[in-house]
Amino acid sequence: MSEPMSRRAALALLGAGSLALPALAQSQTGYPTRQILLIVPYPAGGAVDLAARLVAEKLRLEFGQPVVVENRAGANGMVGAAAVARAEPDGYTLLMAPREVFGINPILMPQQALDGKRDFAYVGVVATGPYVLVVNPGLGVGSFAEFVALAKQRELPYASFGKGSMAHLNIEALARRLGVRMVHVPYRGAPPAVTAVATGEVALTISTPPAALSLMQDGKLKALAVGNERRLRDMSEVPTMTELGLSDDPLIPNFFGLVAPAGTPAPIVARLNAAAARAIMAPEIATRLAASGLDPAPGSPRTWRAWSPETSSVSAG
Image (tube, rainbow, N blue to C red; front, top):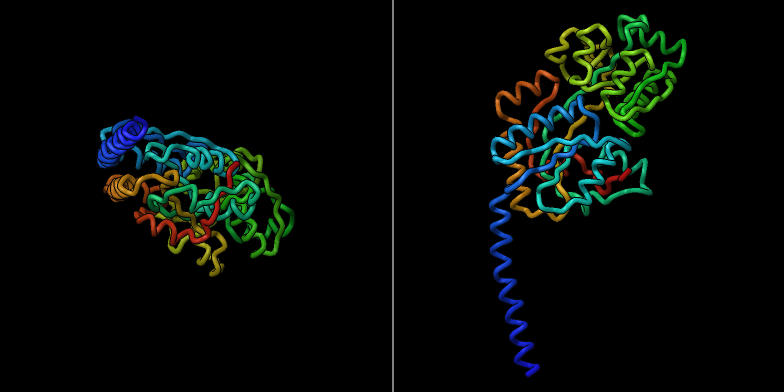
């Protein structure tokens, strides 16, 4: 009796497996069937948050399912990144994150590193964007040259988006380029860093255009330079670093894109990539991104990796 029972059990298991395979394939091709969570690892109001919300609305319309943006700030983006890395690889938890999450944090926090190739599936690049050097108007400088002169007289405190953020590294690079010293004061993202400059807690920072524009228009921030090949449409009075004589522009631009947990099925990744590309290039979305100083940059998962060749690991905070 034992042998026939074993054979029947084996056949039952094979039958269950044969039924599960079509069900799995159907679940992938029918994706999505419920709400998608899109995590932004920074506070609301910055460039990553703006792009995420614009893309989320388009994905909602295309998929016919809610796409909820949730801000999980902390550890220079690593709190949100770690949450996505631990999520089920089913396409229902995604991350919109910039280059420092995948290229800089591993260098600064290797003891807590997640392996980028192991823990994430790259969906695609979404946008690129420059940084703007902004100061508090009370600093009394009306130009970049006056700022440099003041920085040579005393050490100015500057805000960053966190230790190892692009703001931290870019301003340190600028300080070295100018031959001055500045005092680093880290904050939990671009919006609080920019607010700290506007309220006078610190003297300066670099900012994504979306985080700074309204405060500039209200006279609470003074923009001195933009790290870009050309002037920005909504900040046409602000010169580029090259125009100011810094041909080796120390303000490296940023890029950001979508990732999912590793193991997310390839058909789902492809579906997300195609939908995100259509969202980014929709005229109304492209216009809003451009108005904020961001350039739509739809790309494949391979493009994501090519733009971020250092993604061998990602730190978790």
